[in-house]
Length: 171
Image 1 (spheres, one colour):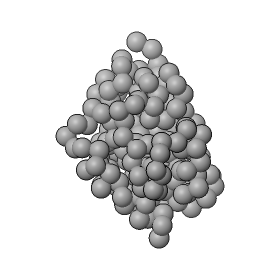
Image 2: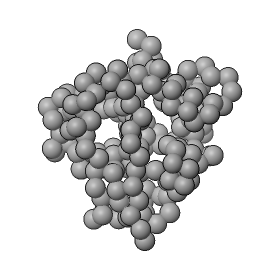
Image 3: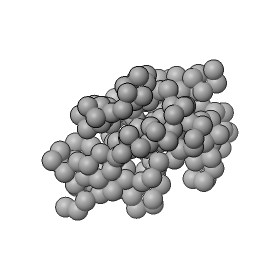
Image 4: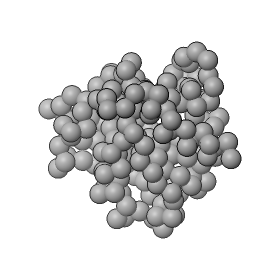
């Protein structure tokens, strides 16, 4: 098994919301795009939240996030994992991203949303103990995973849970 590496964040200095995944899956790594698996609901949900009527290109999707003060990143910088499932991540191989540097560069972030349980779990384990005071004061909420592996909820049910993000950035 080989080491997998995540991407740089999609973020601007004006970001107020941070959405954290765990680690890009194989389709995302192959395409070098966040949430590239065609059955992952992430981009569908984001486009629905902001009333986009037809699917956007990846460049336009990134711009949509930036225009709405949303940052996207992953908790893990690197790990060993076979396949795409979070459950296949070897815990002893995990290296977290540098959140101290991220939060010092993105001081307007007030809310962090986790795209699923593993992102929240690893952030709590790997980051919160060493997190700067600014990060400890943020609002945190786990949302249902947009992964096709999380089939207990429909896309529309997930969308309803994710609406909190649009409500927050519109406020």
